[in-house]
Image (cartoon, rainbow, N blue to C red; front, top):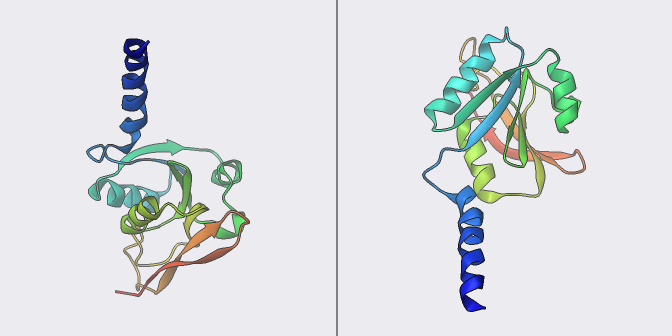
Length: 149
């Protein structure tokens, strides 16, 4: 009986361990309008930070946002999914990494609007902005404050 347990245990352990491999870059799916230039800038920022970006042009970003479960009042120009979390707007890669490290019980992160000076929005006068942690009940709290630079 012991030899049969070993036959099943090894593949199960390997399967459970594979999502935790540190040498594989995190994969993020980005849902955006095909014509959005600042979304491309944010994707470039994520790639430079080591993320694998899968870009999806959608007809209606608002409908996709609703389908995924991000509250509309936190809207920006794109919505993304990484693992079990959603990321709305121009959230810096460092904040996404922190989210993945801390693993809070939350919907995800949002940088509502399109704050000037955030990744992908490097034009115009930079402004202070907050990245919000969106809770399961749709509430929020400041996850990270970003001063204008």
